[in-house]
Length: 281
Image 1 (cartoon, rainbow, N blue to C red):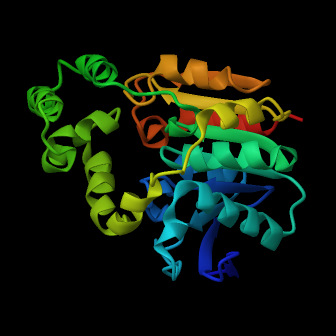
Image 2 (image 1 turned 180 degrees about the vertical axis):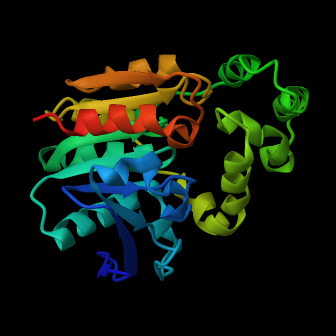
């Protein structure tokens, strides 16, 4: 297992899968070990995946300063990994919460980006807000599922002030295009893969300056793919379209019947679209 040193001295680990040109993959959660990404639906057959364990997750060490968990500070860890690998430019992939990390990296280091892939990305970094109505509308697309009544009730309880963590099991099927054995095992693993303390600090005060980030993204000359799931509430396809429009060369793709982890829902579709995007000159 290879490691490198972050700027604050924390020893960080990464895992490699596949062969070919490297693709730096930053996991979401926030602050979930990169193991949940697997081989991204077979994408490792096309690229060498460099799966980063963010500080305090997976095989990476816990930082001395908990402030290192804040999203904007994690951007420096991605840059340290680029330097460690000796890459002048990177193909960078961020999923979910790490869509914020990848977006901030592109804003801070636009010339280091060769291509940027944002998979069902969180949008805090650019000030796009996912509302309760967005989540309800996405959930309603699954109204025929046997688990839907419990999920609908959970959403109403959250709107009434209940802690989402208390009804997480009822909401879990909404994150997947198919609530099958694979999805259920993937969900179950999250309990041991996520650092709750780090997650609480990820969105800390001062992490984001959306107007400044939006302005900086105008300098990103690289191609950018924002991939949304048809059935994902955050971001939904409309958010993804707006997000892609913030980049000079941003495009949106919507995976049919895809949830928040689209490589599990239809690996062939996902791999074909992402590998094809990365292959462009």
